[in-house]
Amino acid sequence: MHRLGGVGLAAFERQQQSQKSFAELSSALSQAQVDHLHSQLTQFRNALVRFASTHRDSIRRDPRFRHEFQRMCATIGVDPLAGPRKGGWWAEMLNLGDWNYELGVQIVDVCVSTRERNGGLIEMSELVRVVSKLRGVAGGVVTEDDVIRSIKSLKPLGAGYEVLDVGNGKKMVRSVPKELDEDQAVVLAIAQEEGGRVSEELLTGRRRWTPERARAALENMLLRDGLCWLDEQDEHGVAYWVPSAMRWDE
Amino acid sequence: MALSPQTTSSGFLLPSIHSAPPFFTQQPNQATQAIVTDHWTRLILSYARHRRLFTVRLDDAQASGNDWDEVFRNTRINRRLLPSHLAYILDDMVATNKAVYDPPKQSNSAILYWRTPDEWAEVLYDWAETTGQLNTILTFYDIIEPSVPSQLSGIPLALLRKAIATLGKSNRAQLITIADGEGVRFLAQSGK
Image 1: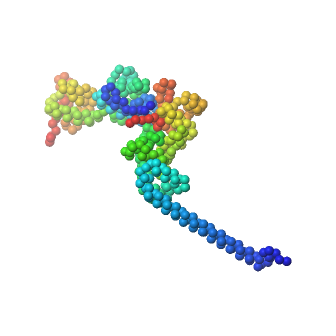
Image 2: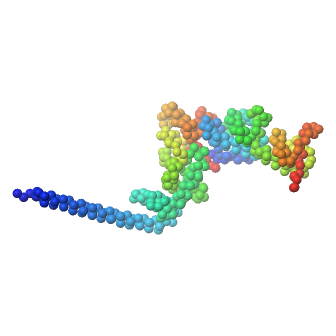
Image 3: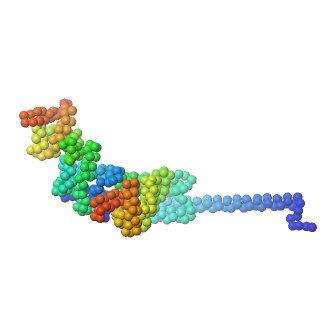
């Protein structure tokens, strides 16, 4: 009787032999793949470096270009802030690291110097405006994108800077390590719409909140967080004002 | 509504915070009130300097029609500083030596230190020197209501006394009892 593969010791050895061969072949294949990937990565990196250094000036100068470059990096899964060296690719290839850090320092400067007025919460467009003023550049040279990226690079410092979305496409930057709950986010959004003024009536009328909920949210912001100011002489009784949502002309 | 600085009819530039409605309310949050107090202190002192107002009274916040209307009231937004809030601010100013209650032992009126007594001492001595009145005996009246208006015109007596006391310490002035009250003699500085 002859069975495929046979029986007995010889067959067992043969089977082991083939398993070993398969294993060798498999690791050789994956090694080849890894090598291939490595070479692709190197190639890609070189291409990116070439692109970045060719367009360095444009990237540094033109906010739109910078934004597009940043987006391209994001699409292909490269974080320009990450990298082998301090400051990441931005620093390595574009000398943008310094620019980012510089911007970071100015953002901190503005946040800290306006903190007493706004309780550590500043509207994004206001921040961009004041930072631009500080740099002595026209509007549009520093963009929201740049500020967000800079704030990201501040993260390792543990300063607790964070960009918040308050709805309606409005963003705020928080420079104090306080958690904002959802109700406060709603209050901030309304304050944005109303030039800074919020009241119980606005919250109950527009958001169908119960008076208790509205009062609790406002009192918390007033007494616990110092994020809003009280106005007892309001035409409708009592109002609350969020300084970071008010427009200040210096 | 943008909050912008406003120029008053007396030519004083009010800061933009003066257009913010909650600025006129005493804040229940201590940290916030500290900011409000600080802004009011600076505003009160700079307005007093601008108008040469030596004193402020709680009554000034009570009824309109006085020197402080432009500051204690904002008719554009229909807000005013309440006397109780002013009392709180004055307490803080006295505690930080930016004002002093005058007369003492009450808290309804205060002398504002937009110049400290030491700074007034220098002004006083400069005035005596440039008007050639060193070594002359002057009555307080001569200083408070001089025939030629000076920076010292209208200075409260309590403040004048403090300034003279400062000069006395460095031997630049001497209090003298004269027939109808008190006077002062300014002394030339040795080596000058």
